[in-house]
Image 1 (tube, rainbow, N blue to C red):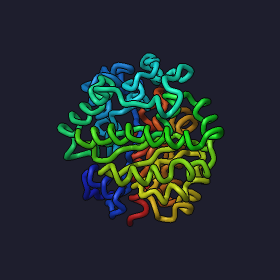
Image 2 (cartoon, rainbow, N blue to C red):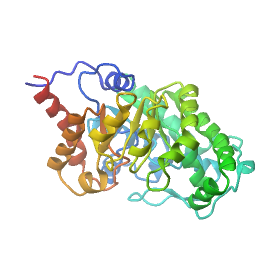
Image 3 (cartoon, rainbow, N blue to C red):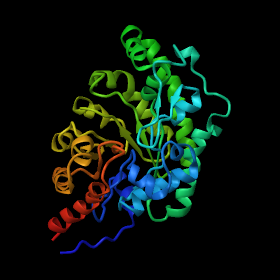
Length: 345
């Protein structure tokens, strides 16, 4: 039986984030689905599309217009704020992600942390807020516009360097907390600016990944900060942490965040069992093996596994590889609709 959709994509996404009924499971990548093929299609290549609001909006819109996702996301990287703070940047070419040169950190401790004058007016931050304004004006009645503000743990990697910051967490936990408490103000400031520009929800990447830190670290350093972010930012927040995070999902479920965007290293059913309905889950289609290297049939199988487990919003596990084939991305919403057609009879 053909699936009858009764909601616009925006309503579908916002209902899912609020834990309300939906006509079908939304497809909404909280990070982004930009690819080289889409850049070429829209004449909006990296790094220009990361720094020009018109190009950012044009490229972001393809997540809806070309791929059929229920959301758009114009913040393609994780480094816009860090550029505005004065980090040493490597902008790369269109087939590579811009990065922060973290071997050349700008700060050493909490007393160094300051928000520069004109932080929100820095071109790399304006690129995001203005792109959100454009998308809200052109697509906002139809599709969910999702912004993104980096959490303090991610910012700490960029401004202190990964190794110095992780050593700080061992050698001086109190100094670490002072750093995070100051950095979180940057998260709030940029988040509020995106909300003012029209963002319906915010992704909150905070890369306390299972590869680098334990679940107990998450509890000690980030749980209370993430609860505070929910209180201070007035739209639904989608926490994003890469890696195997089952050991911290119980804590994450206590934050009050609307949803957690989780990695394919976590089994969907095990993740759903761990959060036990206390937080929505978004994910977790594998990027490097499935979306990049395999075909639509393998994509469909992963989508079905997520839906069988009850995952509330289907998405790639993170920002997709830039060389990902469009047919694999288009298969995600197709597979979601096919699953519902076979289960809603």
